[in-house]
Image 1 (tube, one colour):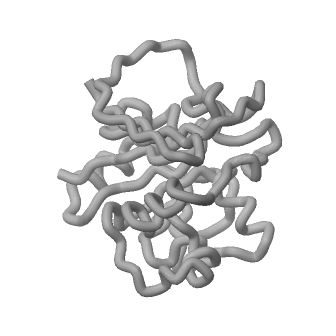
Image 2: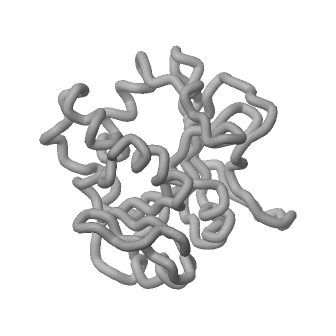
Image 3: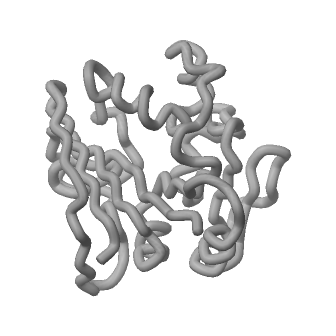
Length: 189
């Protein structure tokens, strides 16, 4: 069975973006960037893969990326219609018009879609964001992989949006980088 991994950058205070979707305070440098390029090269968008020398680098973990509309739209506003053409791309939205050749716009229940995807053959499923979609899929996330960045922003898009409903996780690893980034891995209890 395929697994759903929520692999995302976050601040120390638990936000994945600023209140207006800002994310430029997340660094990409040094040993933490080298680790991402080696272990999760498919999570880098197409416009970054070329300059980083990753154009022909195969995917290591995932073959499908799941995004909410607000995660997808900043690239779309810059003319990037297919941020991850090397992966199957699903964007969950009830307001975007239509799918394109490379991106599937999905208006149905995210939980039902993820459960179907988990039953199909393939590599891992990557939940790239955002907080509302993660909140909907909270009980479907098998692995939570947080790249905790050494910055505090005070408010913004939470790691998981939704009602108060505590759910335990099992710590599965921590890795600290010289850049100050700490990667925390958790599994669903």
